[in-house]
Image (cartoon, rainbow, N blue to C red; front, side, top):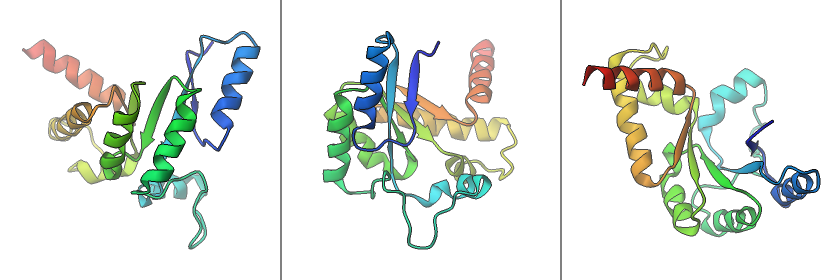
Length: 171
């Protein structure tokens, strides 16, 4: 069984409906991670790979315009009733929103570091795992923890975890 379900593309009423369905079927202990997604070009490589790029001028209705505080807080208030935690993506270009949401809820928050962030941060575009890239990412991830993230979701989580363990062994 699952401990948490990630509501990847959330629409009005979707998280509440998921919570109701889980509760009615005996899954009261399964959490829901509500996803707050902002409009961003950072999704480009993923969308290209998945062949889901929007047409020119088209956006996904569930993606919030960055800086639209009224809409952002509206989604947070709606989801806060039914979810157990939040994730926000892409986090790099929306740290201001992350901080505002953090101030609105005491629920755990996950910073989702999308693949384009890794490409922008890492020295090697091929994302070769090395000490230099690991040190740069560690600095970035620590800044997300200082921002208020309880968790960080990343495409290199396993590599980072192993690298951190190796650093602890050396100390």
